[in-house]
Amino acid sequence: MSSTGGGGTQLVTMLVTFVIIMIPLAVLNATIAKRKGKNAAEFGWLSVVPFVGGFVAIYLLSLTDKALQDKVDKILETLTGASAPGAKGAEPGAAGATQATTDNWVNQPPKAY
Image (cartoon, rainbow, N blue to C red):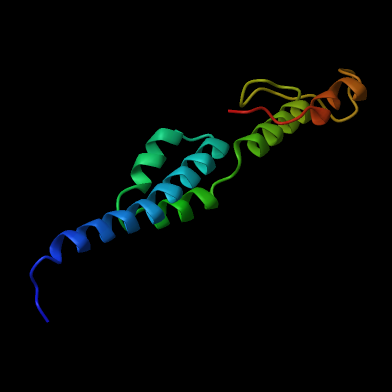
């Protein structure tokens, strides 16, 4: 087999393969990072590095969603009656906001971050 004239074709094939695999992975990781409350651009660019994008995707998938974390924080704030960590909360059944007021946030759609 002759090795003349084949170097350019291999380079183009590698670049096309890179674009087909890495760019969609970077967009996917940026979307997941945004949902998790992380910097989407940072994780998107980090995912373009060969062999790093898969590990970034695994890391991002292991994180808790920002919307879920906000809901848990809101529940804890409602239960304790405190807005600052370490503040003394109200006893269950104590006078405070009515049930309709505290349940109001549950029926709202998640915010886009």
